Image 1 (cartoon, helix red, strand yellow):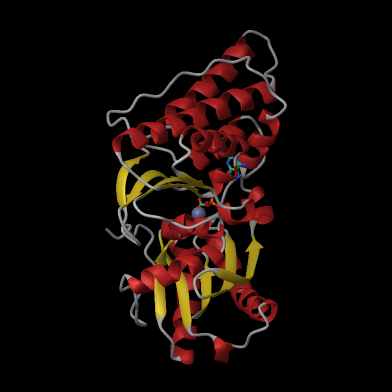
Image 2 (tube, protein in one colour):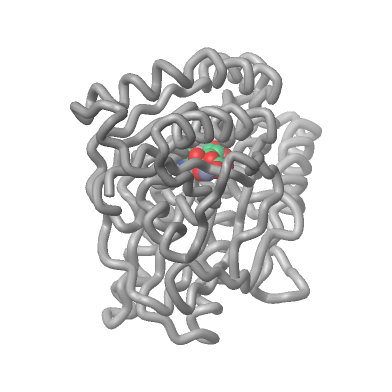
Length: 333
Ligand code: KG4
Ligand code: ZN
């Protein structure tokens, strides 16, 4: 099946052509980061407007790069949610229009399912599978007993981990998105500052707002004492603490569930420390398949929606032109 996939849940307008559920023939991403940088984060109204401006060009380029025409498309897949409703709406409208005019199935895909199935680029997904989803909007431990069935074992009680990276960066006067900047700075930093450990009632839940406040307190304390903050060391301390919280919970979950595969998913899976720590999980559990998407596939893009589409379709997710964007849609169980 040749699927044309669309993703527009946040600040990337993207279209991909995916063949037979695994071969990415093209993946075009138009990023709005340069525009949103000025606001220190994603400005939803601006994001929707830019999606409207870009969507047709992105679709055309994806077809051109795959050397395809509309007549060869056999299904259209789209991120139905979660995300910014105005942004999602643009992708959903485009997908509905295409599916209707080409008379092919319309497959609604959950954004987080897309992030998880991006791991098909790195290996086979054998079930049961445990996913650690770490993005700008989500931080979740998800158990998949079977294909396209998701059980949330733990989730963040406040900020998502990517959001915490972005907020800490903003506090420190760094640009948006803060995650990759902190990652780079941390590589030049050393152990100098101490940050507290996080406690949650459910040991598989996450919390990052306390860590973010602790960074703020640390910065204020240094300022009061007339010391300049060493930004590289601050980045090192925050990244170490945040990644430790993620990995500790993943390791704990692995003592509670028996799985064949572990996958990392979402923008923060691009973090160098996350990648290093997941390599050591693999080393300590040689019987386990530990997957992490290639760097480009950690971020929001439509290829992941095309990769997940086949699974959503087989699980019965086919929509008609009545569907609408859903900013808070839950994962199917
Ligand atoms: O998955 P994604 O592209 O969008 C959402 O679905 O949210 O994730 C974006 C998030 C941002 O918060 C960004 O700062 C973070 O991923 N991120 C990183 C890195 N690269 C992107 N965080 C830490 N280290 C990185 N290298
Ligand atoms: Zn995402």
